Image 1 (tube, rainbow, N blue to C red):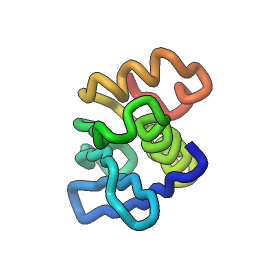
Image 2 (cartoon, rainbow, N blue to C red):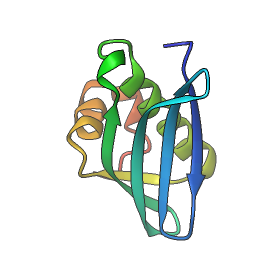
Image 3 (spheres, rainbow, N blue to C red):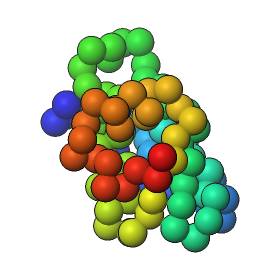
Image 4 (spheres, rainbow, N blue to C red):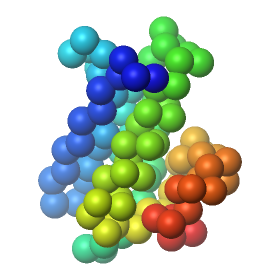
Length: 97
């Protein structure tokens, strides 16, 4: 997982975390802003070439770290993000259910 880089970008209503390796985009996690301090993660995808290498987890952990730093609460409709919140109790401080 350590060879991945995750970047973040956001406009007024939508945002994304992009998974990169050597400047090649290999995945993304998108969200919509529901409120000033609430986002809804709606989609996560990673390239099949990196299946099982922790790309999705890298996206999730980057999103959680960003949420903590910015005081943002997170809801999720994305099945992957929901599963990660269930599996990782340490992330639930940002989970808004």
